[in-house]
Image (cartoon, rainbow over all chains, first blue to last red; front, side):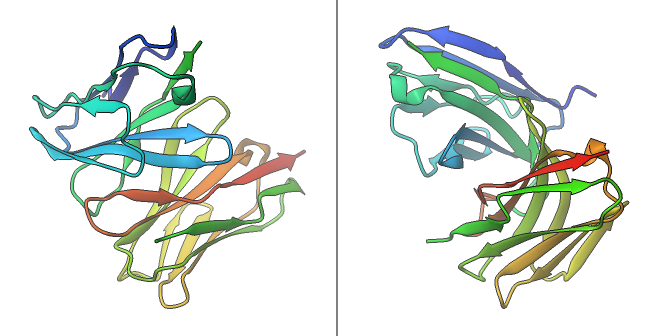
Length: 112
Length: 112
């Protein structure tokens, strides 16, 4: 039972580069989410998806792009990384819009 | 705008004590409230989910209550153990789609 997995766990990239963070879940959950966690700001929602091919912005979407061509995958792309995007990124999933959310182990991204 | 506050920010107790962690939210129109545990450098582990129509949920030594009208939830930990040391996060879902709004967390240390 793999659950929800994120890759890579750690990533260092340079300013201006494009980088993609991967999220894969084995439960066939309809809903998937991307959050970022920063000191002083806590966890904030970047993007979410209610089903394949349905995505929408969260609280802090600027500079990020998502896609969801398959139910099990929800990649997050930083089109042109900035130092302010240095953070820990968490992917989550849930069966519906009102059920328990399960989180991945996180990706620690450093933009230099 | 929904805001979630957790008090205290940090707590240090000797092993065996019964603990109460507090969570408050500004808008009572929530769908559910979820308590998570986060160990350093790790992802979030779901502890308890309380639907808006429920008053409490229990899992082992953990009991969470919800008073939606007053915008409060408490997490009760019975007979604390050193293994309970972690950060505890409270999150509410409002506005649908299971979008979580998090508090800043309570950092708990249980010493032998």
